Length: 253
Image (cartoon, rainbow, N blue to C red; front, side):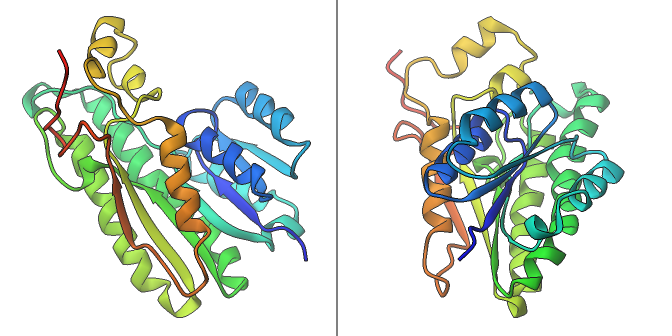
């Protein structure tokens, strides 16, 4: 029996990279996408000894690039595509709505919502052919509640939460599972992007408690993906022990 392929967006760092490494260890072939081709090739070199690895370099915000890249995959790869992990996403800036930068808003909405939609639209026809499959969307605790200064990022992740529910309904007749994974505070490149490289702020974000690691979230994603065909986790929130909500933390200092 041929191995199935899992397509992971934003695979060059954080949750996406950790998922690529974990799924490869568990014998899944990979389609890795991202904007940084050098990192994609490094990851391909790392994992190709274990499984087949295809790489696609594009920005999920670019509709034409998304569809062209997916279509460019070899037919045998597209026909074995069974899992989509919509991981590409980001937060940019944090502050009151009246001080928000339009460019930051556009970047979040275009990546977190429209990018997820473009990739899903391009990939689902191939998953449907198999009669079963799984779409895993990376949401956030920000998609469950709103916190101070989160406004547009929270709105974009609330959209992911709603889209996950809608996809589950729309794809129900085709045996396609849909899972929304909503992490809390995780120490990845997330804060580096959000605070635009401001090291002082970045260091303070996770000070006084142990945040999630990318591997923690990847383990949960793999668990959801490895359940029997008749079992689906619709929605799962994963938090550090020191975090109780989007804005409640227990910090040692």
